[in-house]
Amino acid sequence: MNTMSYKGYTARVEYDERDDIFVGRILGVRSIISFHGQTVADLRAEFEHAVKDYLADCKQHGVPPEKPASGKLLLRVPPEVHGRALVAAQAAGKSLNQWATEVLQHAVEPAG
Image 1: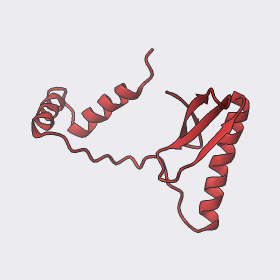
Image 2: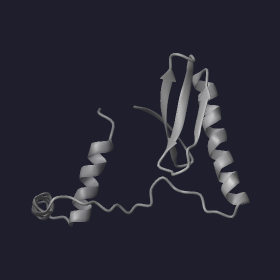
Image 3: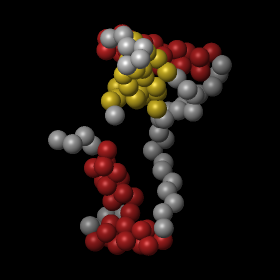
Image 4: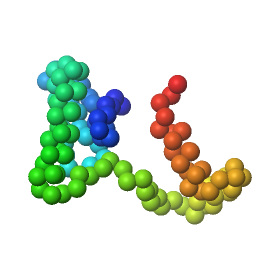
């Protein structure tokens, strides 16, 4: 998946072969915010414009803009997975929260 980021917002980018354009959609917010451009430079400019428009619209309506993530994550996992994760965290000398944060961070880091 190709992405780009601006002001804390991330967009997924795809190429639409039929229309010969790049298409982007901002991830992590309930509103559907999409944009497009014929070149990468056009796409980046349209992405930044879309974010600025979203923030301005929120301000105009007195609504706080959604942030892609609050930093709180609630997961429901099978009890046996929870138990094994807790043991792994304790074995590493960490809280389950610290351990899970490291595991998630490792999972989302680009392969190097």
